[in-house]
Image (cartoon, rainbow, N blue to C red; front, side, top):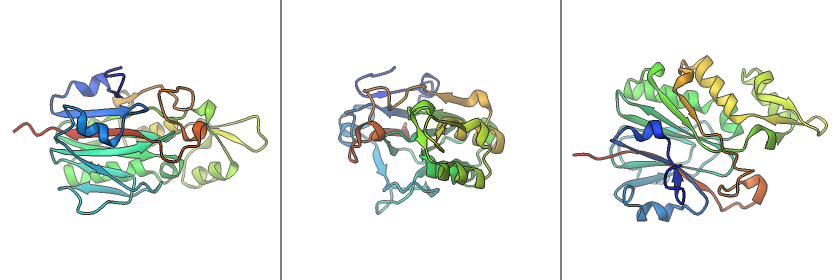
Amino acid sequence: MSEPEKYISVPRLKSFPWLVHGFGLAGFTLDSLKKDGELASFHPVVMKQLHSSRVFFLDDPPRKKLAGDGLVTTRPGLLLVIKTADCLPVLLLDEDHRAVAAVHCGWRSTYQKILAVAVELLRRQCGTRTEKLLVAFGPCIEKSCYEVGPEVREKFAAAGFEPGPIFSPSAGEGRFYLDLREANRLLLTQELGVKPENIIQLDYCTFCRPQFYSYRRDRQKEQRLINFIGIKNLS
């Protein structure tokens, strides 16, 4: 853990001198970004998150607040921000083209394959080769703590997901445990061509660990973890 009082960094991503990133801990807020020496010069881009498959490519800071669940940019100085409290935050990095993305993957965005939308935007706008992408999965609610109803399983099946690897029966009648990480990992590797060894996974459960916010545990609508990625302006 790097800077444990603030956010978790991924060592493999920290090796890029032109990159900033982090998965926020409880207490690290949007205001905290302005007080962090490395982040204070960035322009944070924060969306109204919809649990959708909407992803935006940014050439410049948006003139109004965007509504969606993913951001892509090659522009230095923009800080792409995703807020979570059990959902899976995903950061993507294309080293060759210095492109980055931040994606909010709850169960609704996941079955809508929002990561496929983000990867396609990276390909189209940045020339990204999927096999070269680095992907980091942040803390989220883990399978053993994430019980859902049969309607969720049906939506994933209808979207083309194989339920077996990502759902397992729970003790509740007609209920299932959902593995958000595995659903997105399989999408990336089996459908999108991301190399398994290029997916970095932080195995922290937001429900189990008090240093993270968890909507399912706390039922707090306002508390959200701040996850971010951005490109430094080195000129």
